[in-house]
Image (cartoon, rainbow, N blue to C red; front, top):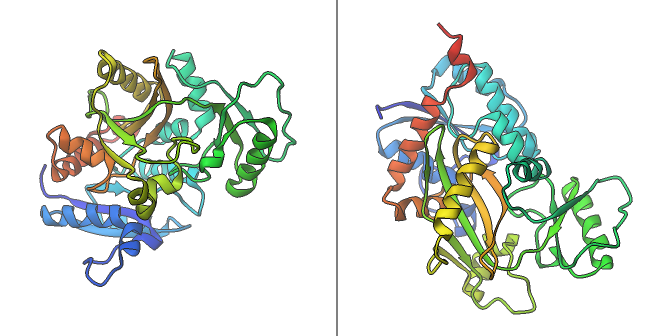
Length: 344
């Protein structure tokens, strides 16, 4: 790919410094992805402009008009403090006829809404855990025929926000308490689904029309106490000391049952297309002891820091981090947005 002008969109609090020197590990973890992307793009000779956004699009519009970037590298995960508003920033880029990396607004809308995405995947015969939704602002009415244990999470939040070991509930009392917690802490509806015990698998997919599936990745829960459910809580995913204490790791999945990899690739492509995803995404699965697979959720624009699962899976598949970033930019530059059909 030729040298480009890349406008990198980040949250206003996550504009990284030019160097890691003098920063603590905790500080670096906050903007690790932003630093990795920006520093590697610069090292490849691209002209890079980081732009921090919070609750206004004025600076973004000005940068597009004045600087004329070849591509916007989108690393936003929220806008104005609301996780589902990032899709509107991408819609704004389309209105500006501006190429961008990652998922399109439609795919972001469908995948961010966990309830709608599960309904769509069920229609496409993709196996997902049985579920119910308890709306915020309404007193929950607990059906008597629910089968415990159940898993309670936000219907919209990502990055494991609101997920803890207490998210897996064993009776109606715990269920009511956790629903109330989700309503209060995440300001969203509570999604309650069947808890699937088994191996936690992640599958990365890249592409717009022609899709490439990355090697299957797995989270192993090490020596986590048996009385705690093996789930990807916020501490499990992001707390380094907690990971080290219990030996929680992620790596290429090994010793999968015959046919499982092919089935995961087939399902991941079907999910990607059913939710109208583009660019790159990660599918989260559970593999039950009897060999049955269940998709937990689809994640548009997952974390792409150099040491995280997506980039490491790509590396295992023969794609270096620089190549990964180049491919993401190529997919963004070539995405057939509607405006391309009418632009002279």
